[in-house]
Length: 79
Image 1 (tube, rainbow, N blue to C red):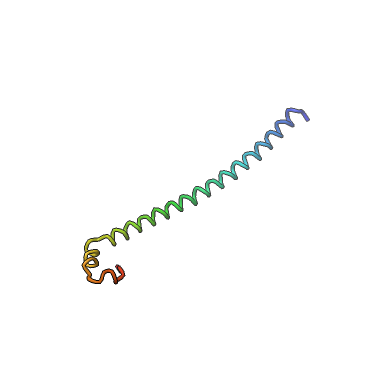
Image 2 (tube, rainbow, N blue to C red):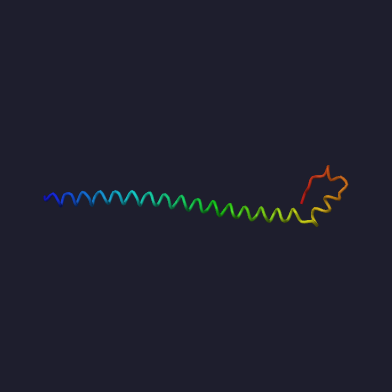
């Protein structure tokens, strides 16, 4: 075989292995990014729920009766 043909075949095979490795790494990174995006979406959802709960608990019409209760130190705050 001609030396140029052998080197071209070796280069082609080497390139194929390199591209396969890059493709595998890319798929792993895409999976990690997707997992992180899911976690971020869950965190945003949790933050929204916590903001709504805080808004509900901080309503003046809810707090005032609790503050005026004569035994407020002995009663748990239930809402």
